[in-house]
Image 1 (tube, rainbow, N blue to C red):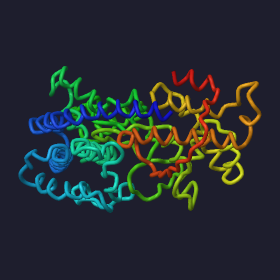
Image 2: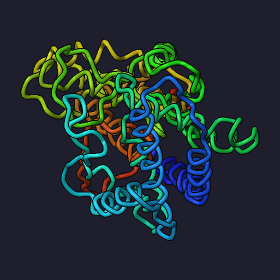
Image 3: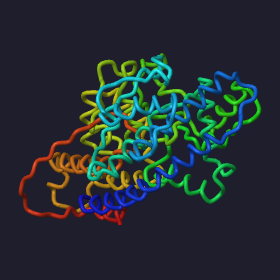
Image 4: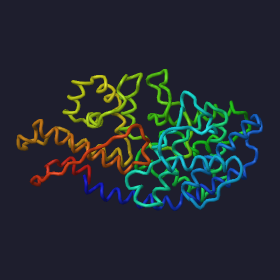
Length: 395
């Protein structure tokens, strides 16, 4: 597992170094498309359209300045917003929400600026640090379908990345940049501006555009992972309403499980999940017995989410490899391989492999909780566990 992750993470680093070179150009193209846009919403109130234009331009301008410090700061209100927000993102401390994002409201109280602190291999170079901040910013600003100005901003951004604006070839390049991790990591959890391009600007008022956007949202399914600071929803099963992001982070099975096993309405006082939930979802008898004894309601929630492990992404395939480490031992093996101590060892191996995988996806997996893992080094005799199913799946 450790050898696999060294090679796999190096591959992700090379991909991200290439993306870091491409992102500023894509953001400039989007900004040009926003500047060149004619009036796409003739039936919407002028003040609503003005707010949508400002919001779309500001979100992109901040990302461009984060990705390329040499990018010029726009004039006027957009420039003032960029100058105020970029230092806060780079400092990556505390919480807050700029007034131009609409002030506090129950389902979006504030931004958690700590999410913009580069982590893992993204802290190894200035280029990767800049890329991390820019992408994390674009992932974090919800453009909610329920709010006219935010909805129209998303549709403006969608039009700016459409083949009508960029041309077929350039639009395809931008599409690969915005959605390049879905095959590797899993489906995007929120709508993105490419989904907004499917809605299109149209000729109707915001209400008609909202119905078209909701139809696209229904076809994608509701978000499964909540990542913004908000008041607890009235519905314990609710995560958040349908919304667009410029770039949507990907939904991983473990993050989806954690959303179901935490929350003040479902599990009062349980603010953080536990790694045993992942091991239990992967079938570890030891993890399941521990949860059943201490938190049976949590185990029930985990069992309700086990279908999330199925899917075609590399990450889901990798989790199914880990599951082979906690299935019943092969027949004819020495007795110690079937005892509780070995089951605990296998459970720890599963969680170590999962932690390594999440380390590679510090940016593109949608964040629901922060987990820390301690390392302890000891010398033991070498042994290769005879688990052909695991090695077959890894192969």
